[in-house]
Length: 267
Image (cartoon, rainbow, N blue to C red; front, side):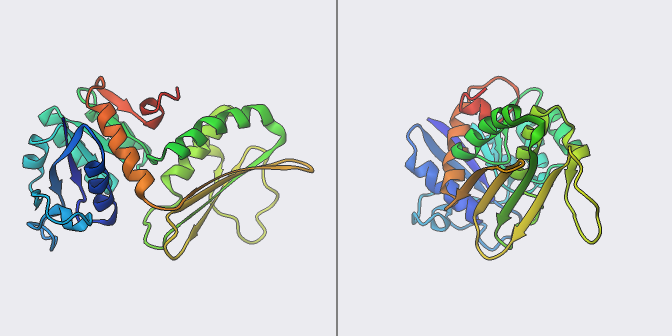
């Protein structure tokens, strides 16, 4: 039985992950963590997941929670995730990180911290989205230089980072397939007389509003035709189920940074 602890256990995503753990064979919830001072600290983690009492209280003691698990699942913020990764490394525990908004420097630090423990770090745990990542590379290579690329993503109004980590990864996948540097060709802003789009740029557009769970569309726009690849998330459950699947995989993985392409065997 793989023991899984959940960081952000009092949040919406944390509750769905705990519910997914409860529904999955071969795993059990060993700990639940949230920030010091949160009003739900001390309460049973099952209530936030809609399960009733399950005998696992929400704690604010990171070291104790990590010490008691095999894998920590973390959907928080880059700063918190890096701290959790550091503590997991100290205790030689695996970690699954679904946080988004990492800078290149933070990604490098995560790789450094994960030299001696296995860590799955992915902007999106959805099986469908990760199939899209794989397909996008093939589509970009086949369509080649004759098609302009634009990416549009939409999320709920409470999402803090923009563009989404999934949209950034889609841009990186397309750019790599076309032999471009995403950091040089991504265009996040068009306003006024901005001139014609360049041949190599990849437009990144963001929509925020209401309770949209997540939508991503990559447009390949040619002369006289257009190809669109869209993924729409209807609930957060696909992310939570994917994170538990990643936790089962990473529990026996070798040290280093992995992603959902590895978990799903898509490489």
